[in-house]
Length: 309
Length: 295
Image 1: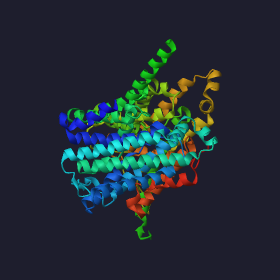
Image 2 (image 1 turned 135 degrees about the vertical axis):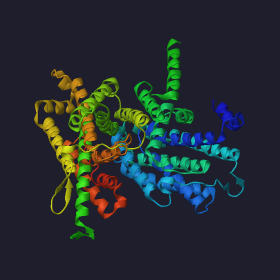
Image 3 (image 1 turned 30 degrees about the vertical axis):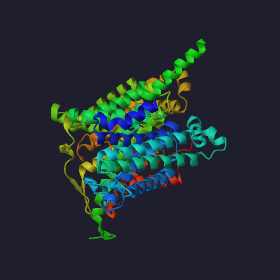
């Protein structure tokens, strides 16, 4: 299946799909994968993940557009900024679990939002416009959509494999142990708070990487990148695609962005109603998500087959 | 003219009364959240949306049906509370066995739906709601002028908070509610209709939010998004006070409103964020909140 996906991804620009949309999709898929690392594998619902996505977008955008930094250096600085922010917010938030964790991350991300609204370097209500894409160490120019697409795709694949590696590592197993039964993980001697903080910082950094790439791809960074709406979207993508599955967030990002792309021209304020309705449906009857449901059905039919044999 | 830190005293008092008014809204909203959380164990993200619906119910009532402020004060919480009951019956009831995170996500979706519908109907810009004739004008206290309506908001909110506290802590019904919070199955076994009580509690919490909305309508712009950022501040207030604590919700609501007002005088740039900063500090010092119990 991955071979098919890889061929599709490589050939996508030639299939007549708008490459900027594809790049945006990859950035949000990466963002959702980062979020899934928390929700899906550690059951930490961060309700303010846009804070890391958006602040990295601002930092990269400002350094590249205003200070004339190189593209790669700008991205690295953006990731470093979101990593630092994740460390500070995570250190406060991991002191509580469950819904408290969700409310705390939400409130602190609102704090980040207001700072971005009032700070000078973010351009306030207007945001940062005209961020140049630059080049990779002056060797490969990224101004063309085709080249930029393969760059974003390469980064995405690397991050995707990295997350798979994390989840399947001993560290990932401890995270899942925390998800299943936190008191038990504590009593087994794991320093749970430290594991959760590390997962949080990793997730924030990857979300930052996605934000930096998004700022370069589209050439702007705005308040909506760091706002509540984006935090909600990434939750929906993960939930709809299937949290705790590798491909789920990617599928979810695809569905949500496609919906937005086609709906926003036609229905105006109803986009928010439709998004809300999808939330309700996901929570009420579709809690495994698209990929989770497929995997479950598949495993279920295998169980039945084994019982029959 | 006397002044503190170079700021004239009337300006400080003005901001403090404004802070007290905001604090009253925080208190009413976080009280409703705390009551709902106590019995249902879910965080009602739609609380801001119900607050907004309460304000709109008053606005629509006045524009379309000529319902005056005083009737709106009674009817809007009733109508919106019934809407809350409907949502509890249709959706929330099926989620109690699951992780409480699902309740948060569901109510988040519900909030998006209501906000989207209202934005489609009324646009994003704010509508103004007139101050009722009886409450126009100001009290001249000598050292400052106090608009009568602001005084009314504070008094009315405090009265409602006190009544809710009395209902829960001092009546037979309240005793049953508190018992169901501790152990719902046992209370049910005593022949008390717990699901009905849960439904009523959600409706009541929602009605409190709608009441706050009606009270707020004449002092803020009535707009579809008026609740969406407020609910996040109220979450922070509830985290500071300690989840599920009724006194904690009321006291920290009022105090944080005052602190916010004071910040507007001393360092206006920080007035948006001061509540969140205080929340972070409180969490570092007392993770369970000021009035909360460590589980």
